[in-house]
Image (cartoon, rainbow over all chains, first blue to last red; front, side, top):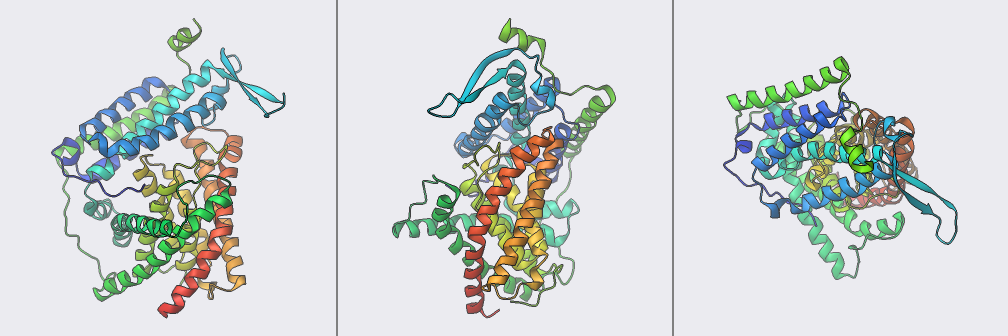
Length: 296
Length: 182
């Protein structure tokens, strides 16, 4: 049910990159798509292909990412895609163009009555759903490989070297170390509660019913973690944590490939901004080939 | 509890910020596949009560870091990617109840619990409003979608979770703290 670290050292271009480079590049792509609000497939699709290429270059085994992709496909295709297709939700107002040809209508009726309404699925909404899914996947494909391809011991150093304070960097580092521990504690607690007859697997029913099933899991693990915290604080205080600037065991150095990747990321961001705000390119529109393919 | 300075950021805050983040990430993973009805890409998250508890018990920095890092971890490990505005919104959700940390003494007292739930609710409103409104720039949605499609279900879901689970967490914590003697 829960993830533990799947990091493995691999001889790939992605893992040879400095961790800071990967964070900076990912942020550049996210900003390039979101700050100037890019929806144009001529920009989104190439960025998706770039993200997919980098993901494939990470050479992560399918069995490792199978579950992650199950999550993201459910999110992207069923939740975001269907939302976009039916309601145009999540997009600019031009998605709801009343002149867009209607492909079909989906009936929403109150069961047992004739009351309800028909929701038109238009060409515009269909293209928007595709654009939205591609846009989200472009960003997600850069983030998915990180837990599998970045050494958990390097997170703190990476954030410190990006200018974050010692304490915040150490918080990041500790959080990554604690996560598998708490995931294990959750599993143990879940087994213990199951042995007492609790059914926590089927999270059905209303919010209150779901909470009732989760409370016997959440409360003991949270309380145990506060006790663990005191022990860690004692250990850190005994080593005089926070009394002086700390040193970090691992050192990071940029290589020429890192400068190239950061340069590429910054160039993509600047280009997106210039295209959108300088030339008006990048907004949402339905390409003619898509309309012709669907309605002739 | 301890001598509390609201904006102190020492070893205690570093450790509990990390623990809160790891717990929030782990619990979010557990429930990330349970969407709220009619709520777009917003999920049912009992972990929100844990986040608000950490804010109220250990201060605003702990709440901010736990929400910010925890949401990022939960989304990463679920394979969802990185959504900076929702992570920051979650951070604010933990930070706001942390503003009353110095005034919370007896975690079993009804007045303390009511106060924590009240500030937690304010935190949910601030955090989810921030995330929903910034979604207008990030996702290109309009204001009504941001308020009706994102903010309202997220706020209501998190509010119910907080009202039910936060008092239990606080009473359990009072017992643990009394046994520990600090």
